[in-house]
Image (cartoon, rainbow, N blue to C red):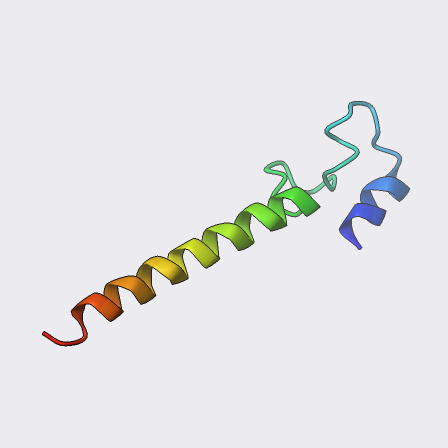
Length: 58
């Protein structure tokens, strides 16, 4: 949906503007940004679960 918004807004002055929405200067709403955020959240979950598993018998 957000990718389509960037496409329809006509803001394709640069290659990067094609992948971001006009109201998103960080690019975190882009498809790649969403994947990066998802990978970061999964990594945090794995680290938390590993810590909990290690410390559960103490």
